[in-house]
Amino acid sequence: MSFKKQDIYKALETITAPGEGKSLVENENITNVVTFGDEVIVDVTIANPSLQAKKKVEVEIMKAIHQHVDQKIDVKVNVKVEVQQKENPNQIRGKEIPNIQNIIAIASGKGGVGKSTITSNMAVSLAKMGFKVGVLDADVYGPSQHLMFDVEKEKPLAVNVNGRSKMKPIESYGVKLLSLGFFTDPSQAVIWRGPMASKALNQLIFDADWGELDFLLIDLPPGTGDVHLSIVQAVPINGAVVVSTPQNIALADAKKGVAMFQQESINVPVLGIVENMAYFTPAELPNNKYYIFGKGGAKNLAEDIETSFLGEIPLVQSIREAGDVGHPVALQENTPLAEAFTEVTKEMVSQLLKRNANLPPTEVVRITTMSGCSSK
Image (cartoon, rainbow, N blue to C red; front, side, top):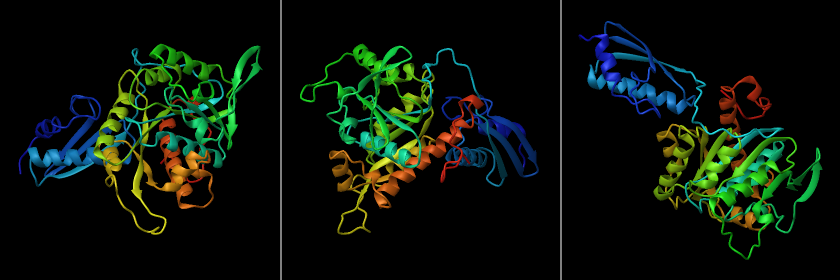
């Protein structure tokens, strides 16, 4: 067996660096190559801390060397994670909101996938864990959080804060809530151009007395557009959660939603994907699972785009009924549905811990004692 180190580098040039459009060699991800007889050791540095990303780059390197150099080479890959804090003059930066530790955007590429249901139940799950939680309903054209928290007829009061008049969020089930649904006529359509919607959202964000929050969840409208850009321009979002159902048509749009947050000018880390309506379990057959919309689609998408799979939520009638009557199913105690939302929420917090571990110390939040969540 005869090969040179240059042959190894040439093989590695066939692998594209994640999110860069350049090869691992051109992007300087390959830090060292050592050859000794029929053994090759490759040191590679990546920015994505997820286990899926590490495994994928390891497999791709081994495959490229075996395919382009020699099948019998014994390849060892050492993967190191190094998140670089690069200054990007074109990056959109929002203003910090005092006393709010984490801002999480809940998004979807298309409507009808249950994004608002995931948001409300994730907020309740966080509150049950002992966190101080707020929800901003940013779906300006179809707000629904005020319905899901059973506060449809409530109106936020004005309070004086340091000489300024601010809105006091409505509180329900331990969650603070602001929604345009409080201020619009439910029988009339909201017909706003982008600038009007953006101005209304800024008022809800900055003219509100949120108090101290560990988490502010932002329920974004479906798709990608003005409202999404307005949000990332207005506030520094710590991470985004993308909601999808398993079928291909929803996954295609979810992929676009992820790509929006990963754009260089936005650069919001995607904490992971939640698969909603993953399977149907009838009440009379609680051990049966029927994959009506397909099986494992969101999980496979998460692996393909190198982000985390946060978990799956079944298609169960009681989830819909609970949302309709304004009593999120996560409020239940020790039921499979409540536990499903708890696990998804814990996984989201775990991914956030990993993300915050790479930020400056002043940015790290006080959630390291969270039971069941880990940054490792």
